[in-house]
Length: 131
Image 1 (tube, helix red, strand yellow):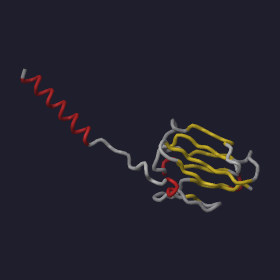
Image 2 (cartoon, one colour):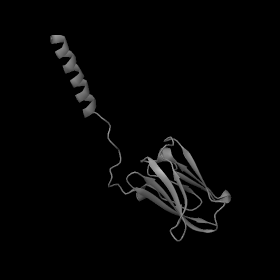
Image 3 (cartoon, one colour):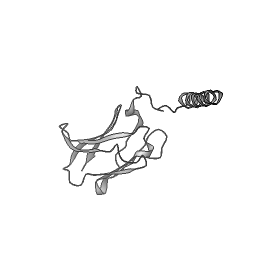
Image 4 (cartoon, helix red, strand yellow):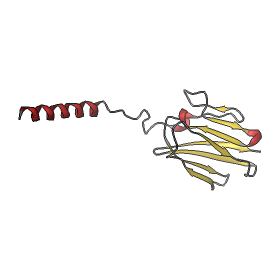
């Protein structure tokens, strides 16, 4: 009987310890995700603590998104045209967190587009110009 009691107490102690020390999200839902990115056309687009998150290769009309430098897990990437219509959508929640995602704008007409990086709690938006 004493052995069963000791086993039960030990299991409950481990459960309480690991439950209390469980890792929480480093990003609060009220965080303004639009502040995570800043862009200058044709240059690196940086997040607050990284070298780069989105790189613009304007000559080849390619944009690269580095998931690892984002503070959130993305669920979707959406591209909208000037009229706000979706011209591209991809579900990316199953991609690894160290993915470098390529957006190819070579088939798109010249104009202004908006890239939306959607997480499960918010959206990061950035306007780009394709020539």
